[in-house]
Length: 82
Image 1 (cartoon, rainbow, N blue to C red):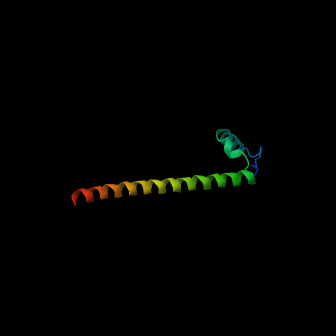
Image 2: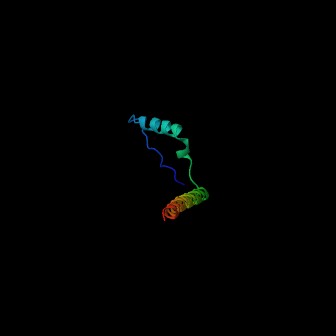
Image 3: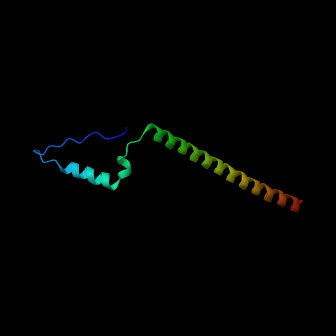
């Protein structure tokens, strides 16, 4: 499920510092502590695909519009000079 392994601690060794650091990290970034399900993973992948597709379509449309505008300027200058 994407959950990190438990933290081994020992009260005898006095290494509780790592536990408190992990607790603070989990409190600062709670979204990283939520396990990811298969449905959530596939939804995220689908949304990423849709966003990339829209970006490519937008860039393609922008290039086409700029190209059309450049051609119209070129055609207007060609007609006015000759």
